[in-house]
Image (cartoon, rainbow over all chains, first blue to last red; front, side, top):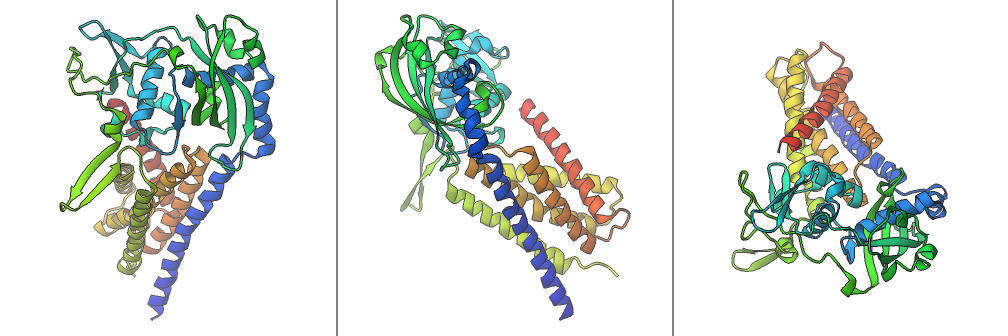
Length: 326
Length: 117
């Protein structure tokens, strides 16, 4: 009886320790990731007060306007086909800035872009806040081979001619995932000069060589530091856009290569709809629509429940089976 | 997500069993205990990080990982103190050594593996 009491006490201790881990980590996360408005609010809002700050914000926003992104909502934590397409286009337009991206002929008239996985995941983290181990190349990474993504790049090295200028930044701290909202305008220019990124909306309006083609709003998280990498996009939508001015509408199609010959695969392209919706039939009755590439919160709960049960079962085995030898 | 749990647990188990052997653990019972103790802490730790990353849409920062790892060291140390027959090293130091090796060793192997693959 005494032994049973002791064991139960230890079991309780182990469970309390587990609970301690969980309860400890949530406020710690909250402290780190819910920016105290008194400090961060001022820091971010001041971004528009200096040329360097404006440059960083405008550069950050231009990353998304340059690929003709129309809307985006980061509501999952695994990369999906939509995000993948966005990143492909970003790499295509900035290929010259990435020394490890290889461009080679496809044997016909087009080009194939080889993007190293490490580079790809680094940009996914910087721009969208997606973490490396949540990237599941087997599900969405068609065209992935031997550490590289292979995609068509027919417009590689095209001069960037669309960019954004921030008008107003608002702290929307009630939802800690999207603490800031920025209103911006999209401009088109014959060629992009670096100095445009430092412009305020007033300067842009006064420059006759710039043409305003649309405007929109974006939500972002301030992650600290300087430059465009101080922000991560959590939402993006265009309120108004002159579609006839959109330049880069051709999708980058994944290609599979074999050895040195790089023939585009016939069925390598996967549309977003095809990629995210999979139907399975169980016993001829139930049809499950499973969203591939995004882990639902239900899965998260199931897996967490299994993990907790396994942990508790192991604790019971340790306490009751592994008695110390006297 | 399941993939990250399995990879993390397998790597941790392999490294900690090897490190335990290097530190002088010899009996099957103690090796099995190390495996079970890791089954208590490792999936729980990884799942907490996964859950928080999902909720907050952010990669865990180093000091959060440090706090969680320290909690794991203490929990494992307590279990080792009460159940391990191995006596050469203080159970908390033993736990600290195993977890330090498995954390850095695991990170290194994972980095190498992702670069190769």
